[in-house]
Length: 255
Ligand SMILES: O=C(O)CCC(=O)C(=O)O
Image 1 (cartoon, protein in one colour):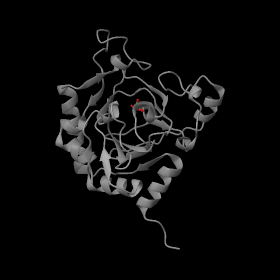
Image 2: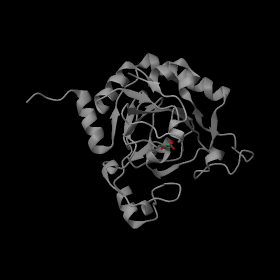
Image 3: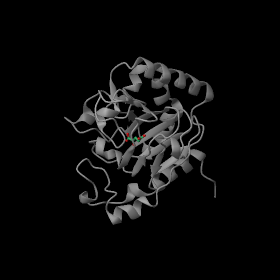
Image 4: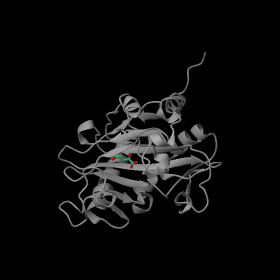
């Protein structure tokens, strides 16, 4: 029997586990440009910017005027910020991968994610367990996000954690709180969270994950800011629902 192509194996893994790491997905020269752009964008702080104090996740400063209140969490609309960010999110290799996954033409949303995530030591927050579908309103719960690690991502600098296979589980609504975070205080949820794993990412690695995969991320206990670029994709036949935030911005056609 002919063996599967590496891409098909990655797709199967995403379908089965809910996430897959593609090592060294970003070529080194592009990675250097992304890192330069990321640092320059953080220094410039041009709008739209989301601050840790705006979200109030655990560990965030209580207000924008408190100590650390100006700590940036996301530099929004990464696609429009710098051509190197746009190029990364629409690269032919990414388009081909997504077309193979969705089996049709692919669009990239600009309504959520589409950001440069910065996780700062001291005032950066942790993100509790959730599914990204909480951000989205689409015909089908079938979107894939890509998380590009611009530097190393480890447990001690706030790396992502995933519960393998959790995207296939149907949970009653009461397993989540009002903000759609998965309630870690419940014994049945805690049992599921015990199965989580945190893939260590090298600079240029990318994690592809399904919008229903349970994930979280810790605080950054290192001495350096962690930078990650994040975009989300869906198939052409899966449209954002009219009147929702998901439909609020024109999307990018990858082909
Ligand atoms: O880096 C983090 O804190 C996780 C971010 C995340 O999961 C999200 O924004 O949906």
